[in-house]
Length: 165
Image (cartoon, rainbow, N blue to C red; front, side, top):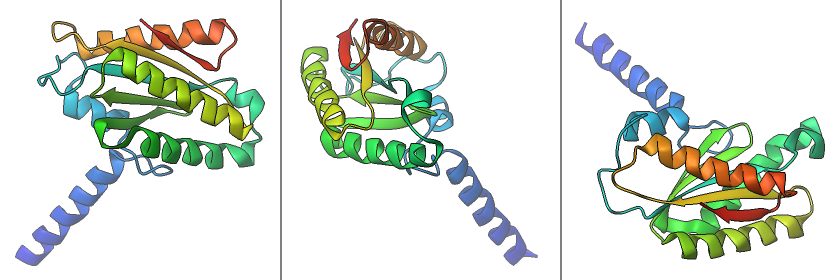
């Protein structure tokens, strides 16, 4: 009986871990983010200085169905390599990523600008990025929406760029 309980716990913890990890990229997902930081919570650390939202421009139109997974995986790998350990990266949705960064908004903007250039140089897609400064008095949800607004502003101007808000 005890053996059955232990193996059930292992299965449950594995399933729980899998539900919080994006299958394609291996990155933590939106569920992990919400459980770790809380939907309306405040940042409890001064570690992060900026929040960025990355979204692929015209993803549905620019990629063939078979190519989409390969592009997302490639982007996740590129973002992880370029952002390194000073960033916590999440797969937010279909073609969207969120990053908590230890850099100032200005420095994060420069790094994201370089990322846009690398992605464009590859030729398959382009990305729009919105970045906002972490304010310890604002909710995490507000940070996300500010960064997303910046991302949408870039998209309205044709995409492939970075907007700090």
